[in-house]
Figure 1 (cartoon, rainbow over the protein chains, first blue to last red):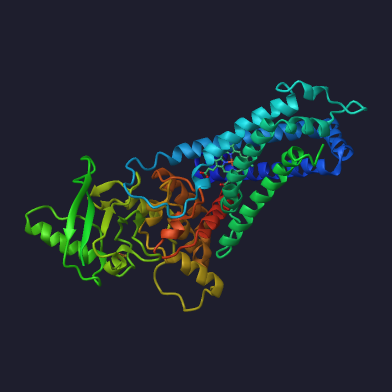
Figure 2: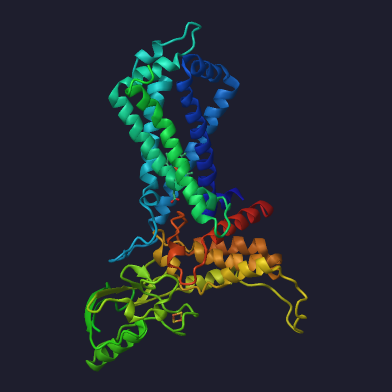
Length: 223
Length: 248
Ligand code: HEM
Ligand code: FES
């Protein structure tokens, strides 16, 4: 069976959708975490300390996410490569009947997000890009995430880079969230327009949620 | 009316093809697209040249033989209409019309606008059938089919297997065709005994033929002359998953 999952287009697409769904859920939880910035330093720092100290939860989650990301990227690259081998003689005239820009650029937007994730981890989690961040601690010795974010996003280059990356991610998701329902087989005739509308709305919601933090810092609402 | 045609001419799969221009004059706007090609072919033949080869059979939109990508769209400008049911009144007088074959590696070119779509037949052979005892015909209504299921199966069965879905898909994917054929039989009681084997075998054959995967752009649904819904692809995915889990 595993053989068939990997070798068939449907099986691979299924893996891509399952891992994509997992990543979307992670991204959503991450956004909810970030939004605690608006509730003040105590709240978000307590949340961050809770995550950091729950080692039994933190490492399996990180490990799972890494596996999901690898499987998603692996199926993404192989499927896209396979899909490009199917038409050697191109059309001279071609109306893009339906395929949206987002659906045609999934590999590129995805790859951009992957590169950004590496940068993002080096920046905030590992702390090798901005050495100041590692020094920011709360009185009880945990990371002062509130101050870290304010400090980082006060630099307009960091804020702009972050906003751009979130834009690309949500562009990826504006197609991805709608598509996953079909890949997972959750769809009935007639519901298509609704699914796609809600999916785009969800992607937009994620974008607004993520971008609100750097924007608020830049505007001086959070300090 | 008049049209300027740019037609893909290619002797066979091994010789490179190119567009050739033809001027079609004195056309009646109520001619079908294929009748227009017939007229042009008579003129070409009268000059002693090789007529344009194109596929056709019923010319009433039910057999799935006609094909062609007309101005970049499989089966031309209209929704839910085949090439044979496309009429010249859909084009502007004096317009340039570009006619290409369906392009996909799984549909190798035979000549001009004719491509080999037997890959679809091999997919049907792999599982697009039911096994029944021959002999005495069963009593009518001995196998009750709920009306909603019958309707849904009928919607899937409307697929004429023309291959426009493959032609339109950026991945040359045959998902919509295979999904329609798997769903049609898998929805009905007669299809139940082979339900899982059918999903596995037809998908395997589809992959073997070199069609692409689905990116869910739904271009297939948009060009399908029979308006087959993309949600049948979701049903096929479901059936395939079930079959994999139950037949490890
Ligand atoms: C947080 C990060 C990411 C999330 C939440 C995400 C989510 C998704 C989702 C939900 C889908 C739709 C699955 C389906 O079609 O059923 C998808 C498709 C896709 N993703 Fe991602 N993705 C992420 C990162 C990436 C990365 C890093 C790549 C890099 C290669 C990538 C490449 C693709 C490709 C190529 C497709 C569609 C391929 C196709 O259908 O033709 N994604 N993604
Ligand atoms: S010739 Fe039969 S469908 Fe067009």
